[in-house]
Length: 169
Image (cartoon, rainbow, N blue to C red; front, side, top):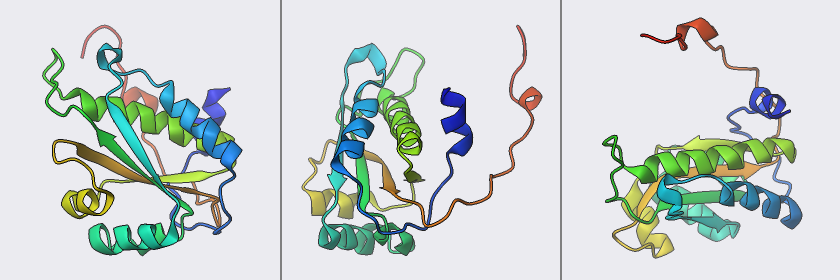
């Protein structure tokens, strides 16, 4: 049941360094590919970084306050290809779309015995320059991916009744 992966998902900030097998990465990419998007437009791209030198350069130039990212064997750079499309509700679709994609990825990673960490604390322009990302594209998140060195304790969560109501506010 998917609830097991949800319960087991943690933000991993220490990695063992063991490489991610290609078959596991393929299944993780497939989970992301199947994510729904606004109008089914599928206007996103993820750059998979496995090259250690490129990974280190990215961390040094765009997120040097998070050196643990260098330990992860894989970094995923999640890009929105159409940041100008605003959904009828008033929100940009690329943010919602990529959140769903990355959530699918993070849950499949847990199923594969891997861990992830969502990273929003980075400078976009150095990443774009280093990875030759077009100016009109927006980078939503960087996600680390790899085998956890250890599993952290669960983060406390508020009870369900603080989030959900029935029929009215």
